[in-house]
Length: 34
Image (cartoon, rainbow, N blue to C red):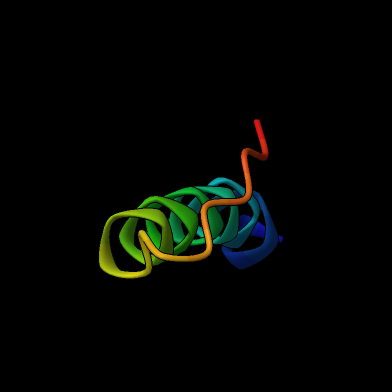
């Protein structure tokens, strides 16, 4: 399906962005996770 091939990278991007946002927002508890 086309949706699956598009949703997979989108989800990865969302997770990456979410992690970076959490990292920048919560600097007090800095947990370095690549």
